[in-house]
Image (cartoon, rainbow, N blue to C red; front, side):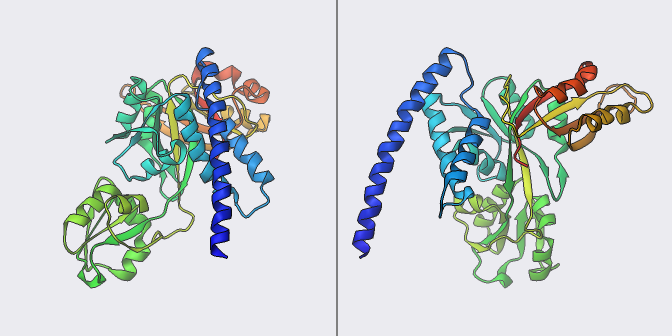
Length: 353
């Protein structure tokens, strides 16, 4: 019985490899066409449309998330056949940003791990990398302010967003929790796992903040009586045994990442989000009047964040704004045309959250 089932699986796998090879031949032709016409290889809206179509057609047992996981890897392999591209991300390897990058670009892509968000921006600005992946906000801890500031300093576009569920693991070589005297992790991880730490350790251990959860793994593997709060991918990378999974306080813990690029323009998908920077006149009611344009046009605002303009000695601000819609939508154009001199368009891209 088992042999017959395995034989059936082997036959299906043989068909799959033939079909995938046929797909890659078509992908190569698409790549040749795009290079001739100088079109972008990465089309997030096209990839989402394919996943939407396949998920609606699937009669099970594959769920949408399973279909997405399978086809995102196929898309990544396909893009490498069309045109290999380097992706910079906020490192080190094993970080959540690394995980977010691989979720979109797959394991075959060439990655550039960098030590700071500003380094990722510089890599994309100087074309050392075609795309950069950086965190912009966490639904528990709020905005990554450095990312917002750097979007205002560089002339780069947002090509896509990634929303990644964040799950922390507790990993250590120690076989007994009573042997653990020191825990390494990033400061934000300590804050997001307070209930677990209070229940199991309280004030009986030393908590050591480090620059990344990957660094925490490296330190914990080298030191007796040490542990790390880290991502699953980091624990696997350093072969640090995971003692507890999903120790975060909230089961609804997500981080939003942005994919940035130079001169990238997305076509409309029908379910888009746009990001802008607004530098408004320093006069009473300027912000209220500007936001009223969105209300009158029926445009949903997703985020409004103020940041210091850092110009001169006075207290001036600019506003980072996310809203539903594409910059080519008629109602968006009509609402914002009077303010074009005060706006920097960062990009319109497929909405993921």
